[in-house]
Image 1 (cartoon, rainbow, N blue to C red):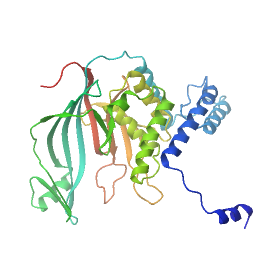
Image 2 (tube, one colour; image 1 turned 30 degrees about the horizontal axis):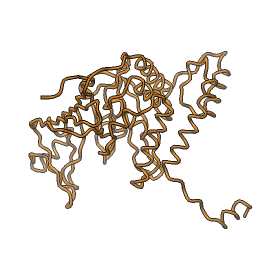
Image 3 (tube, helix red, strand yellow; image 1 turned 90 degrees about the vertical axis):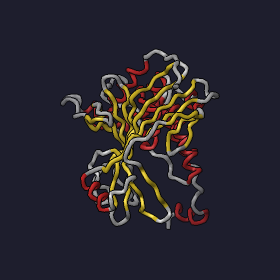
Image 4 (cartoon, rainbow, N blue to C red; image 1 turned 120 degrees about the vertical axis):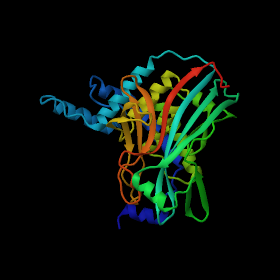
Length: 359
């Protein structure tokens, strides 16, 4: 036994720090190293921002060594960061918008597992969601919701639904303590007053005041988001939020939140600095519009559990975020949907400031 092991045996394992403190320290360290990173990366437009300091040194060294033979082929991660940084540049110089209400119109799609344990089937639901958020955080806004319909996700799912007796509405009878139904046809739209909160993740409210207070520097924005997610993880007994969770939260901000052009640009730069972001080629969103996909996550964790694959669909010509999705990465017996199928999709059809309230 060496001296270090002896000391560990005497004092026992250290008490872990709260996850939000770890996240805050990480973001502070990243912010402190950023000036040096700028000096290291100056003059090298091929290198992505947001690398750790050691990685940045390595990247610069590789660029210098390969200077005589031409640049290395661009990786998916490099091209993903390029696309996000280009979107930031296009957004940063846009004029400040005017208007009394932030109006967003979205189509929300979900892939849900129904049927029984012995004979399950997947259905795809579609809903219309609109909201008007007052520029004054103390005033109520409006929410409009409308179920647009649901259908089996594939011919195989339709066959399983018929074997279940073609229930209408679709019925979830997978456990004795849970029961849910979804109508196959559209429902009437309902308009209600709403408080000035923005639901970002898992039904948790993110107050509008916090949205308006978000910093316009990508490092400070990342610190703010990691602190918020870390505090939530502490409260819920979850793991420290990784870069994929930060990406998911940032994507939802781009899709749903009334950000200033500068904060929107900072959000793109923050996403570009996260480890594992990749350009995943051209795709179509749920509205049929063509865009370019940026992804992060996927694979399995140390326990063999599936890790969500998050996808942000962008219009590369304008830098506009079109959709935020969680997608199927790999098909198997538990998830028979084709790779690239969206489990959940928030597709923005309209987002702008307006002076017109709903009637």
